[in-house]
Image (tube, rainbow, N blue to C red; front, side, top):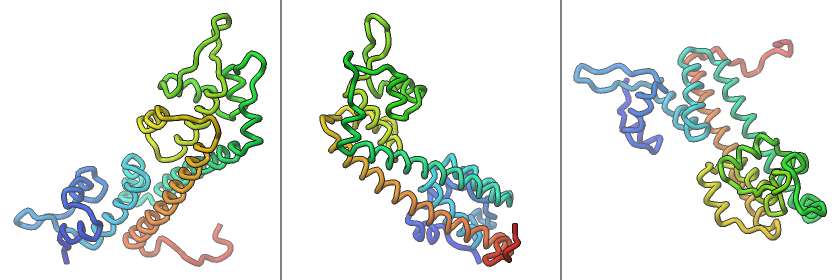
Length: 244
C-alpha cells in the first residue's frame, strides 16, 4: 500500500517540497511512480524519511549524505562509524566547554590572565597557557575574530589580558553550535572585565550541547529502525558472551 506524500510530510512536520528535496539529494531511494506520474511512497520510504529528517536536523547535510549513502548500499557498519565520528566531535566540544568553564573560576582566571612585566604574551606562550594550538590562534586572527597588535621591535603578536579573554571566549562559542558569522556578531558586543558573562555563555553552550546529544539519540533511534526494517536479522540484541 502506498503512502501519500502529504501524510508523510504531516508526520514529520515538514512540507512536501522538502520530501522532494531529500529525494533530489538522493538521501532516499527514488520511489516508483504511478501511471499518472505520482510518487508511490511505501513503508520503507517512511522509514527513510524519518531517519533522514532526524539525521539532517542533528548532523547536517554533509554527514547525512555519507550516512544515508552507506545505508542505501547496505554498508551498515560504515554508517555506524560515520555516526561515531560525529558523536566523537560532540564529545570533544563538550570537553572544551567543560574545560573552559573550569578555567573561568576566579582563582584559575586570575592565574590565566597574569601577565609578565612587559604586559603581554607571545603566541607560543598564549597557546601553552590556554591549551589552544598556535595554528588555531593564527586561523582565528586570519579570520579577524580578534585583532592582536604586534610589537614594534620584535614583530611578535602581543596577547594582553583582553586578547586572552577573547581567545577563551572564541574557543567556548566555537565549541557550541554558533557559526563563524554568529561568533563575529557576539564578539562585536563582547565585554569581559570579569568572567561572569563567559560563565553564562559556557553554561548556555553546555545546555545546547546536551540538547544536541538528545537529538543524536533520536536520530540513532530512527536509523536503527530503518536498518531493522531493511534487514531484520542484522541486529542481535542479546548476543552470546563470545560474540567478539
